[in-house]
Image (tube, rainbow, N blue to C red):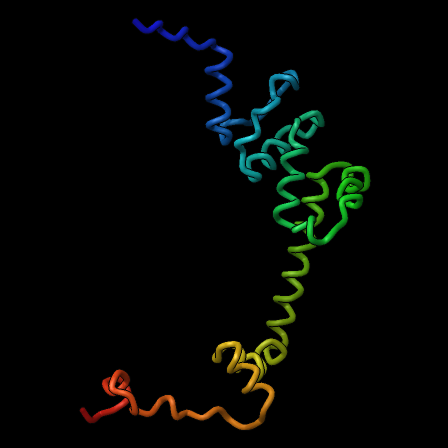
Length: 171
């Protein structure tokens, strides 16, 4: 005969509910930080940002390791920076969250500047070479760009039986 499992404590039920519904977390008030450990592991970064914005006086919210992982993934820091530079980021910016917000702001500014440049000078982005690159595969792209001779269009002729129905009026 199996022994029944003991009922869960109210604390574990409340903790599981919060972990599985991070969108319901708003103001943390004076909740001790040891209760918050591990609660934010399942949160998306939109939820983390919302929680930080709703609780500006709480600097002890334990999410810095989550922001670090997010920065490593989003900004490819392993490829761009050395391990020593990565370890110095919190001391330079104050926290991984502040680093993420600054990098995100700079990314948005670059995208806005690029969009404004594209709007004011579309020829800069859509030259003849870019049209060639967009139309031909990479091997043909090199041939077409490197030579001024146009590519032959013999592949469009109805020489093979499989293409006869598409390119030819005769059967």
